[in-house]
Amino acid sequence: MKIFITGASGFVGKNVMGSLALTHEFHVFDRENFNIESDVVLHLAGKAHDLKKVSEPNEYYAVNTELSKRVFDAFLKSTASTFIFMSSVKASADAVEGILTEEVLPNPQTHYGKSKLLAEEYILSHAIPDGKRVYILRPCMIHGPGNKGNLNLLFEVVRRGIPWPLGAFSNHRSFCSIDNLVFVIQELIDRKDIPSGIYQVADDESLSTNELIQLMAQSAGKQASIWNLPKAIISRMAQLGDWIHLPLNSERLTKLTESYVVSNEKITQAIEKKMPLSSREGILKTLTSFSQSSN
Image (cartoon, rainbow, N blue to C red; front, side, top):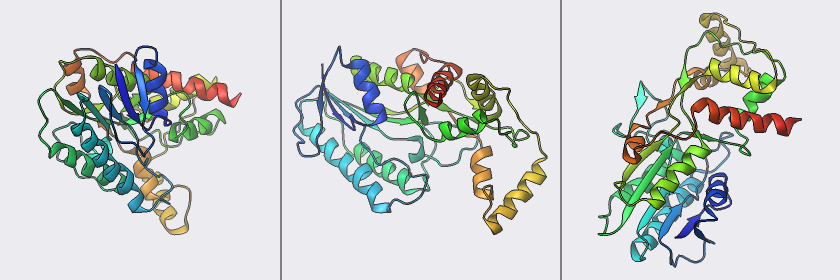
C-alpha cells in the first residue's frame, strides 16, 4: 500500500515509517508537490506547541491550518481512499474537568489548539465522497525513546536526587506511548471497517504524578523522594513567585498539579482491541531511553 506522508522527519513520522516501511511504500511530501498518487494520506506535519512561548501566532495558522487545508484538498481530488490528520487534544481543551471525551464542545485557549481546531472544522465541513474515509486523531502527550520534552526535564530532576515537593497534590494525567499511536495509525491504514470520525488516542490508563515520579526513580536506580508539604504552604509560595519571579508561580503550580485524563474508549471500541502497551510499560520504555542517554 502506498502512503503519502507529511511530517516524515518529525518524531511521529520517523516512528511510523520505521514500523511500516517493510510492508508499505512511502511517498514523502516536500511542500512543493501536492500531486497525490497513493492509497493513504497521512498528514503529520504541524507546528508544535511552543512551551517557551516565543513563536508568532501566524506560524501556527500557516502550518496547522492552511497547510492542512491544502493537503486535504489534494486528498479530495486524488484517488486516495484514506485521510488521517494528526490533530491534538489541545484542539478540544486546555483544562479538563473529569474525563475528556470526543463529545466535549471544543474550547481551545492557545494558538496551537485554535489552529488545529480550525483545520478540523475545515475537514469536517466537507462531505466525504463515497469510497473515502477521513480520520482526525487527537493524541494526548506523546512520548517515546528519542523524544526529549517535559518528561525528560522531570526525569533529570529525579535522577539528580532532587525531592518532588508536590506529593500532597493528587492528580492524574493521560499519556500516549508512540508505540500505541503507531498501532492506531496502522489499524486505520490497513482496515476498511473503522468509521470516519474524530478519535482521541491515549494509553489505556492514566498515571498520577506521584506514580510517575516513582517510575522515574525506579528507572534511574534511585529511591523516590516525594515530599508531602501542605498544599496551603505550596500555594503561598507560588503566589510569592508571581511577584518576585521564583521558579514556582501560580501558573506553573497549576500545570504541575492539574489532572488531564483523556478517554480512549471510542478508538478502542472501533478497533475492538486494547492498546499494545500499558501506560506503565510505555513510560518505562521511554524512561529507560533517558537513562541510557544520560550514562
